[in-house]
Length: 150
Image (cartoon, one colour):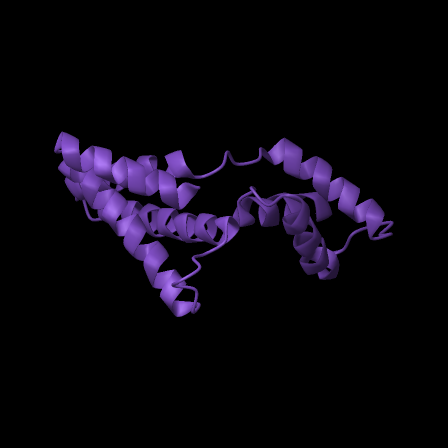
């Protein structure tokens, strides 16, 4: 579905002559295709969650580039990357809030039978929370778990 949306939007952007949008969408199609080939799934395509993972990775790399460009005083390049992040986020599911993740963390701690979670339990808790909160950002999950343990 996401891949089909990207294809449809790419065609529309090409017809409209929107070069910046065409550039972003082509790079997303390329990243998805690369992952399909790498996983040996070129013919059948990737599952929806694998495509979402590719898009999240692309968003993260552009976020890292924004920080580097801003640090180097290259605001024009940083703005270009910000535009690309905005486009990518249109295809990603809405992220869970920290509050929603916190409630899942508390639920997981109870399910795992931990009376008091310690830092050594952090990996188990994060793994279980990721299963229940597929749309949540992994770094946000780790931060919420870390805050709830301390």
